[in-house]
Image (cartoon, rainbow, N blue to C red; front, side, top):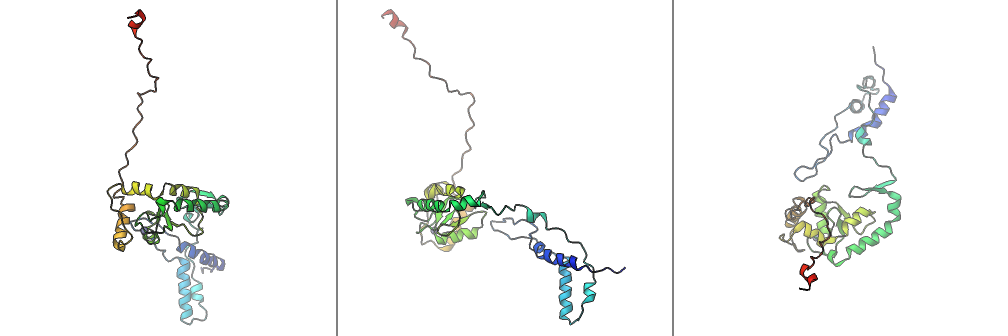
Amino acid sequence: MQRVFNPIHLAAAAILEPVVAATPKKAATPVNGQHRGPTGSATPTGAAALSGRLAAAVRNGESSPRSVLDEPVDQPRALPPESLLHGVIPATMWTSKLGTNYSLDDIRKNDKRAHAELQRIRWRPDNSRCADCAATPTVWAIVNHGTFVCLRCASVHRSLGTHISKPKGCTGTYLWGPDELQAMRPGNRAANIALLGDSAPRLTPDVSDAALREHLVDKYEKKRWAPAVRPPEPPDLMTFDEPPPPPEEDFFASFGV
Ligand SMILES: [Zn+2]
């Protein structure tokens, strides 16, 4: 029996094809500190193969590539995979770089105030120099580490990947979330105490590109100098907050001794 080509079917497949081909098969996984792109590559599907054969037929001068069109499309196309629908947030929501969702309206309404606060924090004396190389001015924030950095260091941070550093410009028109501002409040000095401790070398703006990158990998990715954080002491269940005992009475005083 001859199979009849269904034009609606082909049209639907052609629409879905770029969507499916662009869908990573596997989530990107950081390997050896590098961000790797999607490892899967789309395999040719029936529709893609068919359109390829059609193009070849036209190139070869076939006036009516019926032979190609008559070939059946091998599989009915499914709906877009679930991964396309997963994690989609409504357009009325806004997600900060730290992953918190907020009402986009609220964030926009608060934009002016948020920028004013960001600049107040940024111009504090402890944030006036880059947290990494001590250069001025500090024009970028690394929001997941709470550090203000210079343009040069920000570009190195960007190359580390967002699983290590989440840079955000301080001078542009980015929206800022309450969680991001909260992360920036402690400032460079506090962040460097947590990241560098007392023993780490401090860089100066004339550091070479290679040494700067190595330092930032050690500081932010390997946490080479971060003082070990002691786990909190377990509560001592046998201790109670008792009032102090009354002072002992002087027994002999009552006898006038
Ligand atoms: Zn710097």
